[in-house]
Picture 1 (cartoon, helix red, strand yellow):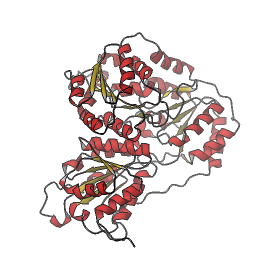
Picture 2 (cartoon, one colour):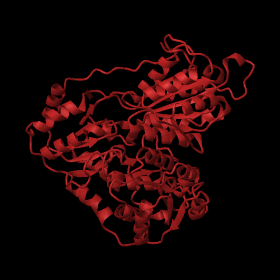
Picture 3 (cartoon, one colour):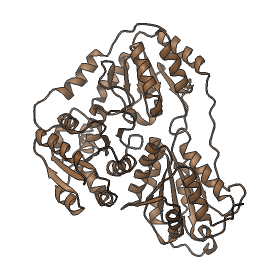
Picture 4 (cartoon, one colour):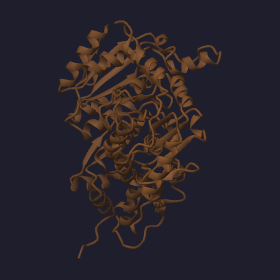
Length: 531
């Protein structure tokens, strides 16, 4: 018979049982007992330099490892910094369990120092938010992990007061757990027949794969699309699911570079079939057309199920579709769009420009390189043109589109896949927000390649001001020496002035046992016409 231990021990034992082998975070006095339980149960604790970056790294780490990522912070200001990663986890469907301290229940109501209504704050942006009590603590942790992992994956939040952490656990139901909603799915043969009928009646179909498609179905998707000769594309969060070098690939949909061209492709189709397509990645309105069929395994990130959506197990349905005879031989209406897209990435001289940077980096990056991007103009260009090698090889914040994502995402990816090169693409604005995590990467022996496109501007906002006829205001800043910053954190710093130097620097950095920051000075005007 198990002897009851402390609540802290019970929480950590349940995390270990769920497959958690690493916790990211920043300590505070109120979580020291929980951290000691983490140490005793041989779970790695990764100290980050900011709570928000810890949350981002944890979510990416968990997604790759197939369990929930865990971020731990103290109460008050430390906990409040979790809003960014929790919101990102919700809209980008990355599994994250955030745990913070909270002030003691016994000291309320007169002790208000650092007391915030954290459950009320985080409840609207999480799938479950609750306080851990001795009663039912184990069940609550299980429910939080289940909520984070259930499709659509997302965030859960638990608050644990220091006095409760050292209390003796007790059984019983949890006190404030939200149920995980089960979804009723169609029979796969019924869904396959419905899609086949719609495709039979279409002359110019287009398949778009979104972030709701599981990585595991990528081989089946590719087999079906190739067998039926269906034109296809993907949203940025689904890059790597499909072969982007195939003549059937039209482009990346959902607000990336050349978005007007991608919308033109949608308008040229008479049927859009969205596999795991989620409006959270789409900033225009084309997805509201009646000709869009939603083939989903779960609701969208915000819990919405579009009218007429087919909720169905993708694997079972794709097995049936791939084995069936195609119901038609469709006209490829997307040749002009495909040719115009390829002309941007394949043409051009040897000068430094956004699309040529992608080309040069791709030439230098070894096979299997994992790429993360921050938010900014460069994200749009890499999102459209980076040739992702496989599922989980390309990461960006696109549902939330939160600046400050790229470098901590790369840290989480490298710790989850230490054998793979990991390259983060940042603007100089995003680098200034998160460069401190270079020290974390050094301390954790997790070398990164960090590309800093230094245009001395929030160029995406700058172009947005100009498109509205507004003068530039608050978007330009002075040059920051990324090379010297890298060296201050123990990384190597390189500044390149040509594409050949960039390719060579990426090749060398990918082999290095320490992090390398490669700065590329560039004129922000060169983004004009692309984003």
